[in-house]
Length: 248
Image 1 (cartoon, helix red, strand yellow):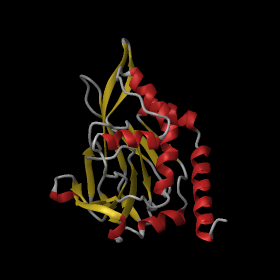
Image 2: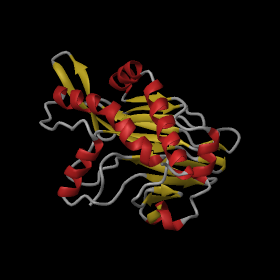
Image 3: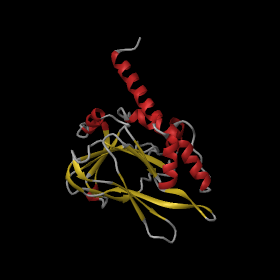
Image 4: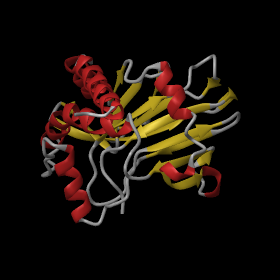
């Protein structure tokens, strides 16, 4: 017989699975192909967002803290979660992976990259861990007034899943002003193109980690992608990053 706590956990897993399944993944795949990103509406409720953001001071659930200014990454800070991952991150990671995995394999095929990703996130993590990539990469970021995140790529080792998801925990125009999620792409022999992705509390954005395929006149070519966050003009902004490969 399940305990009350186990029943709560079971309901939570069901809720997350249902929300992920409810996304229009045909449209999301189309957006990812066209722009390198796709907004995933309503991954978390406002209550869940506030509860997660409130856990930022709990050092026991994190493995490390990074102050961006010390490393030239921008201003603000972030913390990497420890295993076991807290809910709902633990439920979102495999659920989102299962939907993004076919897109990742299709992209690699288009770009002539001879790597394929297994259906199960657990199996993919075993591949990472066998290569010595043992440290969890999901993280929570905290920004205050004047903070920002420089354009970057989240590459942590030999094995990289080519898509990741960021989820906004704070409410724009209520909790903070500014702080837009920004993507840039660098096409061969062209200047970089920037894209600002509008998000509301609980929304996620799936986007390319490193490169993505773009159809040209002679087939597909690789476009280099970077992401960041523009300057926070006021307030405080929290975000969760769901990265599917682990780190060395």
